[in-house]
Amino acid sequence: RCFSFSVGRKRELCGLSLCHSAMASLSAPDAIWANWLHAALQNLQQSNLLRSLRPVLCLPSAFCLPESPFLPRSGVQTSSDGAVTDSALDFQTFDGLGPWDRPAVEMEISHKTFELWLNQASSTGEELCSLDMMSQNASSLNAELRHKLVVFSGSDYLGLSVHPTVRRAAAKAALEFGMGPRASPLVSGYTYHHRLLESALADLTKTQDCLLFPTGFAANTAIMTVISNFPQSHTISREEDRVAFFSDALNHASIIDGLHLAQRQRIVEVNIYRHCDMDNLDELLASSNCRRKVVVTDSLFSMDGDFAPMVELAALRRKYRFLLIVDDVYSTWNIAMWANWWRCIRSI
Image 1 (cartoon, rainbow, N blue to C red):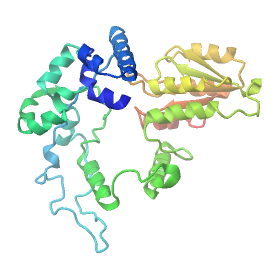
Image 2 (image 1 turned 30 degrees about the horizontal axis):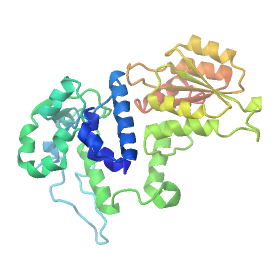
Image 3 (image 1 turned 90 degrees about the vertical axis):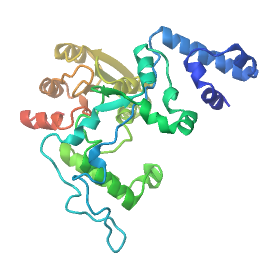
Image 4 (image 1 turned 180 degrees about the horizontal axis):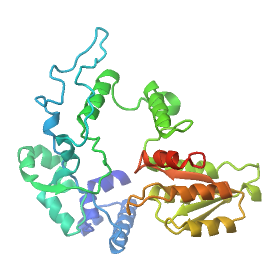
């Protein structure tokens, strides 16, 4: 009931304008939660922490249309057993940027959404994408979407979301094998293709093995909690079971949340060292009495654009023998490349 209430009045609540007539029509339990949500949203707004959803329109690329020279000319081909076959044009690679790369950064939003954004007004995106609007005014929806944006804050650095070869491979896989998870990996959702991807990623990064997670956020929270939940002894109060984490001050939020979860264990302490300051990290490591030490860092810091000092971290790792965890989500290739260059892969 609470979920239905929130969805039914999300525009008023997110706009912080829940009317008295709506409050009067609520039962006592619903009114309690309505007041709580109203107060929570006000606190978030006053603290400048209230965020809004701004729906963008991903424009179709001319290079994904049937007449595109970068798509198969003869449509989908299948073999006698129904499997989708590869044509000569199916999986091309291209040197440098292509004309299909522009849609990765060029988007459009409605003028109304743009005005709300400029005025820092609360929005759920419903001013554009409500079911009523789309069903009653679908013909004029596209005409309104005329405010163009060039987006530099995304994470599609290589433009793979719009690359014709990636699109084609995804379409081929969907046609041949279907879509969506069949179950959780531990039940029956772990397929041959998951294992193949894990093996390929392990080979790419020159590691022993790889384990897939649905998101990078899930991976970081999982590794922090796993390390802190397996003491060496049966009594978690023993000193040798303590774990000391050392985290860069500008690490990603998923690492921070993972450390917060880890701190719920009585054997965990968390130390924050100044951003990329190896002298500060050295001091903290030297002052820690924990036998098990873990240093966590991003490889490329997404908000500042600088790299972690991998050579210095490798040297400190040899000195203190800590476990080094590197979040490489923003710079795949860089860690493997640097580690090979400076021959510190074993330390990483």
